[in-house]
Image 1: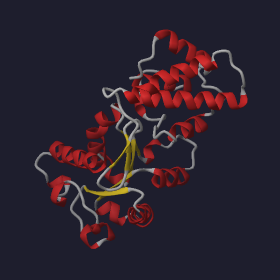
Image 2 (image 1 turned 90 degrees about the vertical axis):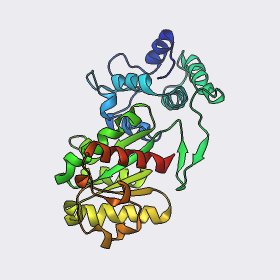
Image 3 (image 1 turned 90 degrees about the horizontal axis):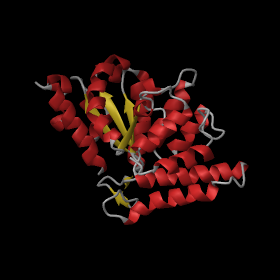
Image 4 (image 1 turned 60 degrees about the vertical axis):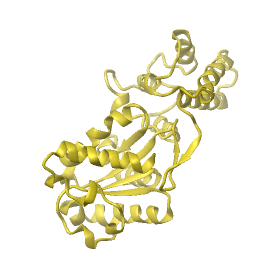
Length: 272
């Protein structure tokens, strides 16, 4: 949670013109694109809980959850954006001071650091910015996929990751465009393997091919998650290390909670 004082929040809200539910001149689309540069999915459920979902309320929820360093970086970028079209706001310098104070936590070892740390798989991990994880799955397996998602919620809540799957596409948006954008930008791609996944042309031939290409380029960590028994070992995905351990399908574990926890821990170990 950003350590903003009451008066600092009021100053920022005034600068960002949040009184009527908006943030500056952002549309919902451009607001989401702005936060995506920081690895934050501002449309995620954690920023929508308990309020109307306006841009101003999502901004407040973000500040309630973000570590100081990330909050400071976002605020500083918002100030620069506002000054690009609305020059000379009376509280701009005050807001910059607030952002600078938050960013100073980098020098405090008790707070998150912005220093890049390479994972064993070449992914650059910035502790102030969450790892983005893309879920590729067949809709018939949504209930099993959701078991894994729940085990990762706490990691998302503390700012380590942000997840994305196609159920998060806003109504009216072009689903193919959204999926292509997310799978190309995510740090980790999870392939939820099952007979339905292998039978799905879109999952296997399109999302699967993109995932394999990014794996070979070294631009993403790709992890098959074996949901149900299927002949996946003859597919190109067999070259990848799978979860749960030993590639035993989740449906064959006596305790699915334990199986899903094994998967969640394996995912986090791969990026830390």
